[in-house]
Length: 318
Image (cartoon, rainbow, N blue to C red; front, side, top):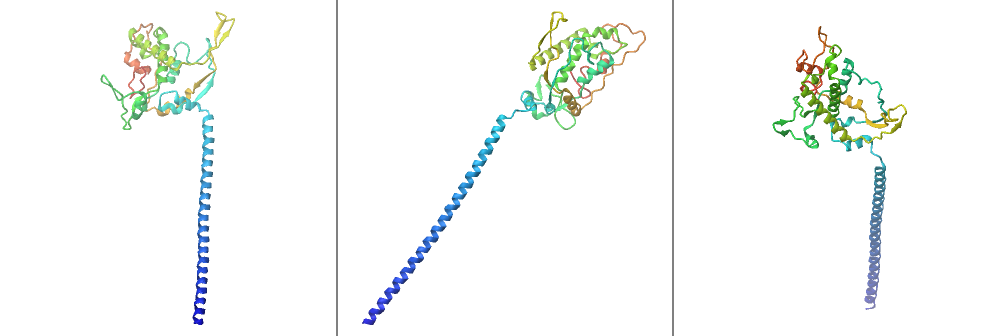
């Protein structure tokens, strides 16, 4: 009996030992689980720290970029694009500061009575071929292909699409040239031995006057449209008739005309025929009245290149 009690006692001890081992193992498991959880928490904290740092860095960069953009002054080209209608020639726009010499007696290749050289110089300012205007840009200039009243835009027939167009500056220069020619109209008739007359001036008196009036109106609209705000300072000058005169050579900012010329020559799709300003060398030719030319107006018109030519053959400036 005593032996049985001893065995039970030993078994209880073994059981207690087993229970202690289980508890110890459980504690180890709890420690492992806690360590794993702590590791996960540390990882999350690390990720949050990295993400916060990245967000802060991005915000700082964005703030610096925003400040730079706000403080940055737009270029002349960017300003010019914002203040004009879209044009394929806008890419050529550049600006310069000039003080153009324009005194009353200033010599210029564009002043004086008509000569072959002077007429050729004026042709060089405006006589260019047509350029392509893309169809997808028509809405920007408030146009559609069909203008109504049997009027449609003239397409290019080279298979590349687009419509025939010209830059307004050349129409305006054509008009200025025509007004210049009109002021010398009688001189042309009196001096056919020096230079041929413009085809536009060979029209009837009424037609020539109507064309000139159209050009005066075109230039009035253009000048008022651009509204040049350059200050023109009054200069006291004892040699002036009233003791003072305007400063005709103001300090002003202008588009570089030579850049527009280069672009136009590069992008013209047809080539206008060169004007022929050779003197009319015929015996017995003296004073001629308007409309009394020995040549047909059509021939003179095509010769001068100063008006209504077929855009497929030359340039149309009316």
